Amino acid sequence: MTPSPATASSRLWLVRHAAPLVPPGTCYGAWDVPADAQATRAAAERLATALPPGGRAVCVAYSTLQRCELLAHELQALRPDLTFTPDARLREMDFGRWEGQTWDAIGKSAIDTWVAGFATHAPGGGESLAHMLHRVAAALQTAQAWRTELGVKEVVWITHAGVARCVAWLQERGESALPRSEDWPVAAPGWGEWEIRELA
Image (cartoon, rainbow, N blue to C red; front, side, top):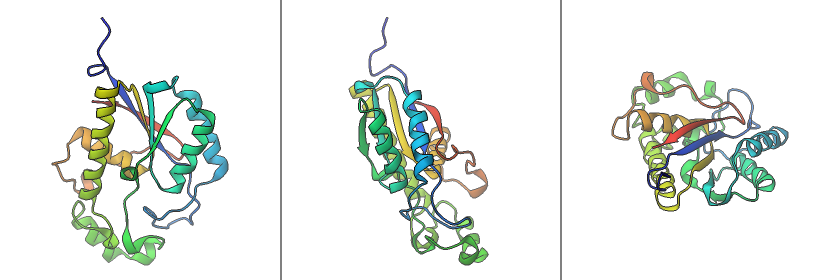
């Protein structure tokens, strides 16, 4: 018996952009910096080969920050059979006035304040982790709707390390559980790499 679209398993590909062109030790999240063009092209080539045939079975959503848009455009040139959708919910955390500063310049006291209120404090006056988890959870609901309503089998997110960690938290703990810094997932895909999770 063939499973119906509502019950068939689907996969979520969490693809991280290539290395951004920023000085080491710089805070960047919503800061819209480009990624290395050659590394982006190489990542797109690897991903284009790894992804199964497209049609309606494979949908790609990507962060609207240019380091992810670049990868999405490179992939689209190689795989025009896939469906591509920009999604601002897949952006990295907004660090407010910290963006573009070095972590040393931000200072230990400010970082300690963030760590103490890890889920609810908005670093640099930007975005709290609780808010980021909420928007990533909403994006997951959209991905699940693609699975149940459209029969999509492969959902690809071209996104950031922070979003990948949010997905890990949401799948393991749920949105109602607010993380402490010591509980937060550390693992994330490397530059231009990906991890694949079951889309439950």
